[in-house]
Image 1 (cartoon, protein in one colour):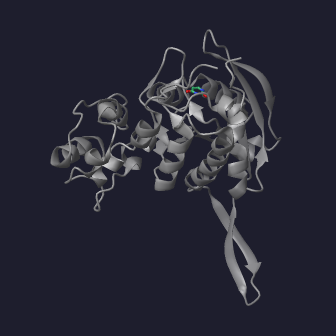
Image 2 (cartoon, protein in one colour):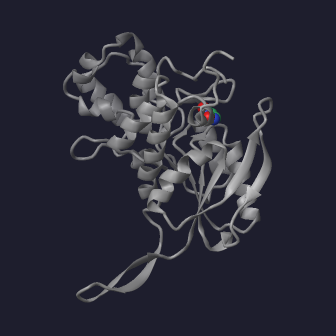
Image 3 (cartoon, rainbow, N blue to C red):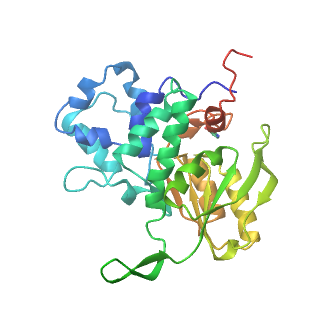
Length: 308
Ligand code: URA
């Protein structure tokens, strides 16, 4: 396995870049230097700023005012984010079209843990599972429901049931890391499997397995993969799903980047994308930076621990 991408900035930049957290910490500290003063690693501020300032609205904006605080900090942040009445940026308003950045303190905290290169596989698995559960609430926010009549012990009640069955479709193998967490709140969902192998030379996907339930065309299909890097696997998987009849598709990832979002949006503009963070860039090996390294290797513990 390649060294964890961006590990040197992982934990700190993770908070800043997580969920585009663009300014989430900055605006909280706006008007004072609290954030900057509390940050021990001032040498890393410039890098952190760069990562934190990746654009949500446009794909590529950047700012270079390391060390600014207080009023200037707020102004700089304001250019990137809408800020609500209590000073918290609403990232959902600033995401690229069709992309929902799920911003929540628990998600930012857990995402920082999984970004941290020092996090064990055990903790990585646990946190990823919980992240998947938390993200599912937002992914399912506008699922259609139908009336479901039940009898409480006291009276009839007109409640709700999901209008469509749900299929969770992980892209193998890292997508498997999201399944258990999603099933916590979608316990009736079926699970299909899509094998997309990334050719390490071309970075293009090759399909080797496709097994989906027969009710694909009537179901809400959640295509999941924690990392949206080049976007080619996601594009290929969704193309295959549509060719097999899927109509109600959503794509769910933990960390994305502008290149992957652009690729997927252009190929499948009808498929909404949900992510917890948009990181600034891909490195030459198509790893997201700062990212979290190889999600599959970290989840399954398949990196070499003794240099072997
Ligand atoms: N796949 C991963 O696991 N990590 C990346 O950064 C990119 C692709």
